[in-house]
Image (cartoon, rainbow, N blue to C red; front, side):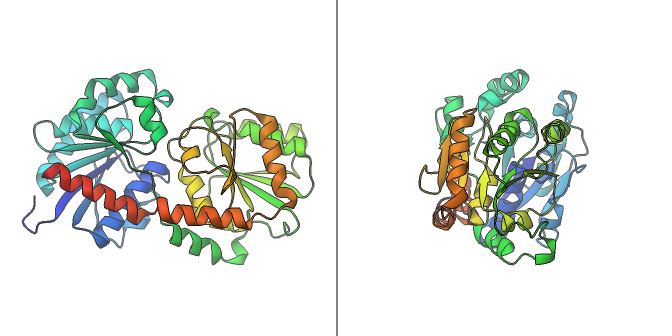
Length: 365
C-alpha cells in the first residue's frame, strides 16, 4: 500500500465505450476518488472507443491504454503491459470487468497482488472459448463479484458475493428533468403514450418482439422509440417499412445523450432474453418511468412486479401486449415514483462504491 495510506486500485476494462460495465467502472472511479480512501487508476486494452473519457477529464484519474486489439493473441501481451503499469504506479489491487480484460489481468496479478473479478453477464451468454478460459483461470481471482443473484446462480461459484450495478440516480433525474426543450426529438406526443427501449440491436435484445407488440396494439395514441445501434438495426428498420409501421415505431440509432428521450417517454420496455443487471432499466427508473420487462435474471431483481412495473415471460408476445396496454389509459406516475425510490435506495453509486471499498480493505487485511 502506498505511503499516504490510500489504496491504489487498478480498474480494468476493455475500453471506455458508453456501455454498462464501462459506465460502472468510470462512475466507481469518480465516486471513490471524491469520497473514499481509494486512489483509482483505469487500465484499458485500447482507446479506440473512448466516449466516457469526457467524464474523467476533470477528475485527475489516470487512464492507461495498452494499445492492443481485443483478440486471443493479445492476452499475454496485455497481461505483460498490465504488470508494467502495476509496477510503475504502485497499484495494490487489480479489479477487472469483462472477459478479455479479466483473463489478461488474472495472469498479470499472479504472485504479485490480489485480484477481483466482477461478472456482468450470465454464463450462458458467453461463448464456449470464454467459458473455458474463465473455468481455467477463475481460481486466480481472490474475490469473485456478480452484479446480480441471477448472474451468480449461473456460475454456481462458492465464496462469491453480489454487488449490484449502480448509477447516480439524482444526476440522471436532474439531467432528464432539466433537459433543453429544443433537444426533445418530438414534441407532438402530448396525447400519446410513448414507450422507449434502449439497447443494442442484437438477437439477444429481441426488439422484434416490441415491434410485434406495438403493431398488434395498433393504437394511434402510442409510439415506440428504439435507441441503439447494432447488426440487426437495418433488419428492424426494414420490418417497420414493410409493415407500414412508421407512425408507430421510430428507430433512433445510437445517441450520446438519452436524457431528451427519457424526458419524452412514459414507459420503458425491454424484450431482452438475457440480462446481467441492466443499467438501462436503472436509468429509466431514475427518470421516474415504470418498467415493462422480461422476467429474466437481473431484470427481476430490478423490477418488482406490480410495484414499479410488470414482468412478462420472454417471447410471450400476448403478455407483453397486455402489460403495455395497461399504460394507455391508466396513470403511471405512481409506479414511476416507486421505481425512482427503489433505485435511490438499492442501486446508488454511493452504496455500491462503499461495498467495493469494503472488499478492497478486507482483501488487503
